[in-house]
Image 1: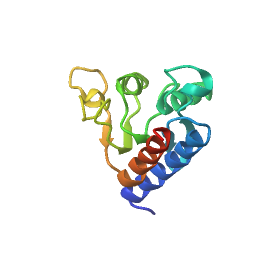
Image 2: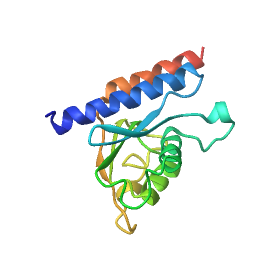
Image 3: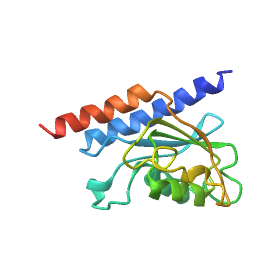
Image 4: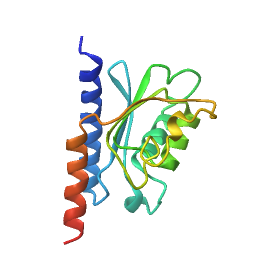
Amino acid sequence: MPSRREQDEAGVRLALAEAAAARGAGEVPVGAVLVREGVVLASGRNRMRERRDPRLHAEMDCLDAAVEGGITRGDALLGATLYVTLEPCAQCAGAIVLARVPRVVFGAWDPKAGMAGSLHDLLRHPRLNHRVELVPGVLERECAALLEEFFKEARK
């Protein structure tokens, strides 16, 4: 059986595939997948430009897919992990807490908008009714490189 670290790297690689799909569609390359016991429950990617909706970050797209698939009912998220290529922002961190996602693993830090330790830690705020187990920096270089390449090309 793979170690927890190997499972986390595999999950982030799945999120990186979603991020690559976002990039191919002209979106900022961020991807997310919700996994339980090695099974992908839902996936998402940035779709802000595609759907002309600034709220459609990868995490929100993934959680929307989970809701549509009935994954968020009852205790269905017990044991699940949300893998994301970029540290969640305030909107996404809030949705993660409200959905009661038990565990989040992310790749790259977001010093400008990150709410899992960069600017604030909304995911583990002690006054909220749900705190997330957090594993930051998994495959950080790969996740950051994808974003850096995208923005470098966009600025040409």
